[in-house]
Image 1 (cartoon, rainbow, N blue to C red):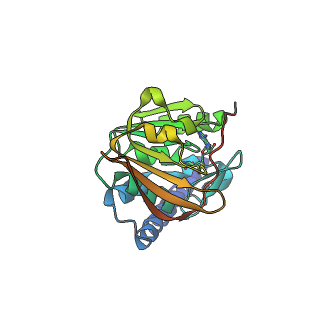
Image 2: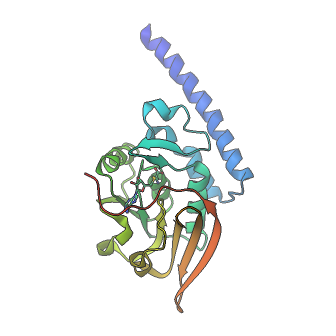
Amino acid sequence: MVRAVNSVELKGIGMTSQRTRERLIQRLVEQGIASTEVLDVIRSTPRHLFLDEAMAHRAYEDVALPIGFQQTLSQPYIVARMTELLLAAGPRQRVLEIGTGSGYQTAVLAQLVGEVYSVERIRPLQQKARQRLRQLKLRNVHMHHADGGMGWEERGPFDGILATAAPERIPEDLLQQLAPEGRLVIPVGHRTQHLQVVTRTHEGFETEIVEAVHFVPLRPGTVR
Ligand code: SAH
């Protein structure tokens, strides 16, 4: 009896979220996300699993949501946009992510690139993210508890780097860990931030400024 009620309720939730997810994808398309591979991955990745229960019902709204420790799970539009920019010049094999946070962006990346190397400075967030990625059986993710402003030199160079926290200026270490033709997608700035794409070329680095964004700051040091 109880079981029957539960399963009916679960079904209801499942169907609602399917429709809600489709609405989210529609919104992303309207905002200019054009990559079908990115849209497909966002459609099939359960964002609600990356939130605490109290927030899970808002998982398919196009908003950033709190994940504790004064940090946020990025807005789906931003996740889609940054992923699309990272992949815009061709597939990536080794991608460094700075700021694992909930692990949602990590999960999206893991389905689209060869290997993801993800650095997070707050240990409890990293541990939760690790469990979720394991639950989703995403095994090409490698995690590191450290200050990602220094990159992850032992695992570099990377043909893609994506930062989900904003430094005031791009750390030199990140540029140095970019492989030739590698792309860095990063929010930069203090009060006003802009999303930037830096490509390593034969001559040096080429920077493209994409759009204004709001990210939590990249902070030094680690939290246990
Ligand atoms: N991509 C995450 C966004 C989390 S917010 C998500 O979708 O959930 C940014 C994250 O960057 C936070 O978890 C924060 O702790 C982390 N962060 C900030 N500065 C950092 C640093 N120097 N090194 C590693 N992670 C950092």
